[in-house]
View 1 (cartoon, rainbow over the protein chains, first blue to last red):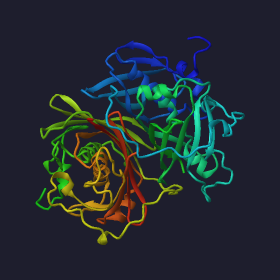
View 2 (cartoon, rainbow over the protein chains, first blue to last red):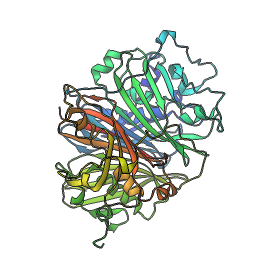
View 3 (cartoon, rainbow over the protein chains, first blue to last red):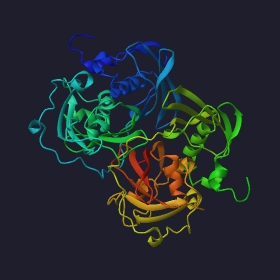
View 4 (cartoon, rainbow over the protein chains, first blue to last red):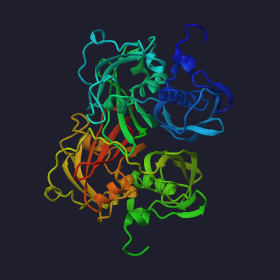
Length: 272
Length: 272
């Protein structure tokens, strides 16, 4: 690693302690006030599978369950191939820290195939990246400064919203890694969680909340990602319902020319 | 079990062979041509957790990974509490058959809490249940006959669609168990997968395809489900993209009076 190593790549370096056994720590560069950015945990869990010598192909689907607060302490990660099939491999990952399981994860990998394709959905109309106001990094800290975000609507700062008069849960933005970095599955896995929790935007104030489980489907092939390169992508996020201390959230990531790269869903715990 | 046991309840009877160790077989009543209905597998995996003596509360989230073809042979199921927290428990389940892992699953459970609530989304406008044409069970077989389905739009039979001229991926329907059965988490887990795979509807013809991974978020409390009782619920399903041999699919289940009960997402493999 050199001084020019991108913070994301630096955060995804694992120590190999045997087949499917890894060690590491969640990089401080992707932290926030309360703990690490869920997206960096997802990317670390994915890296364990991608580093496994038996892994074939690319990530297709990932579900990361964030079971407990993660600390800056070292973690151990165990990766196991649960089932090896012709078109897919099913992986299980457990991340252990301080004597307990802090995260579990299932990942599906497989070779990219060329098949019939059809895209019923399309990204929202967006102003040009260059013409969209930069979300100032001034006053921000932690992982949010790792992204260049430009909100068309639904910035997390919505002072007119409150619990009594909830604001919209919808967000549309341009997003790319900061500094710029060619898009790959590592960055896509992290970016799929870069939509700030809807609860904050809708209620207009900070409230204790945390991702419980995060599922991402990677629809882009390696070639689709190479075509994006370091360009910004379009992101959308929304919530259907907040009820009984949980809310759902769905996010989409699109190339500027309208190709769906990934879709991500999560369930978020909130205190009250 | 008596002759009046509902087929769903009959399909979810597990043999307990030790703490977290269960035996069973996927009921023929929820089969289709190629294998069992994914929803019944999800419900069986969930039942293993719900039957565990250490389980607290209700299902909150589930991800079931269908790793290999399941046969009518007996299966063994192992359920493990990966992490026990104050507001949530994180469970891992593996279903073994014929010497290999056929399905893996993560489930989050927890007690129902009363909190701030808000529902930005709403169900689509629907004609009355009684005024919507019944999807004839004539000529149908297997699991689809276990549901009373009444399509407002997006019936799986779309003869005007083809791979060259894809039809809409959207479905809106009324759905309930057949025979009628009070809605609970068992039936909700199964029903969340009762949206016929979008590929068939969009291309207007059968094509080899299978659910790879299915995630359901249970937003309804026990009281919300009791309020539904045996009434039909509103379902919607749609797909964003078909690419590289996979397509995503999202489905929503709503009470007739507009409360979101569950949202479900899946990634589907297709051959070509």
